[in-house]
Image (tube, rainbow, N blue to C red):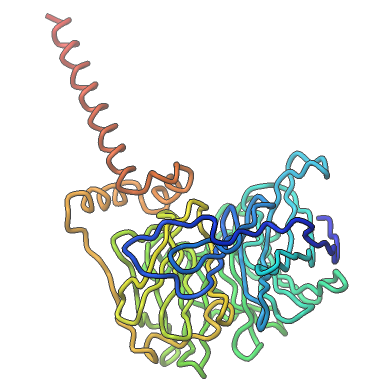
Length: 409
């Protein structure tokens, strides 16, 4: 690992787009204020999908959070195998501050890490001007870094707290640590271990995991199935509760802490939602959702209706309303907002075909295949192609058996 503290740069030619292009809207509705979206680009959209800002300088953009009372965001970015470092298998991880009104940017902190797959910093939480919390997938650890000095002030390693027999392959993508935040009056760090199907609560003083308040259990997919971006909602906003993008269960779910247990209190999905990876409870009680395998960003109201949705070709990961606190920082629980749950059952023939494909291959396999397919191939198209392929194979097998019988006469 190479650490490069506080590299500061400014944009001489800001990548700024205003009113020149837009994303397609689905079903009407207007984007309710400036919304930042990450993926293979960083974009800011509003209105009928109008793009106000676009940044394409990095290979990937992961977590994005607004900086309060400014037009800036803090975003974690990735460049893989950079030419200037002459490395054949490495990734440059950056924490950057970008002003989406002017295009000015500062690189606050940089590390060069080995490998190019499952090593990205999926989440960087801005604590204050100098301190940021990092979910380090490559090292399976949480780091609190002071970007003004390039030093690590606190860290936690999964190697010291978890069994090597849990999660993914111990010598590879073991935890897939994809989200961190400070919770419970600063006493704990909540960390999302995707491959353990668990959100763990880490005591910041002792470094131990408090298993009595952790959410989920390894391989118990009835609770969580390889989740992303859980947000903690504290007691003063109706909690303790956790709103989670329950990715391989294709749903957004909220759990409320009650009598020492996590109880499912709200769930949302529609017939399109495939591999969601972010859900933020907004101050108005709505929920902002990224639908990765449908290339969709949407906002859901208190009755579970889609207020607006847009199509984006950038393999969307995170979305943030720039006029609100980061993540679910201004939102209340489902119970406090009197939200209505929504679930769906396959009703049409294409929907039943989709359900059959998922039942056969499993949601993880289907979502993995969709992740690497072209953006136009969503689950309905994939299911149709698969059915056509299976039919062709069955026909070929039948013809071969007939030829065999005839040749044996």
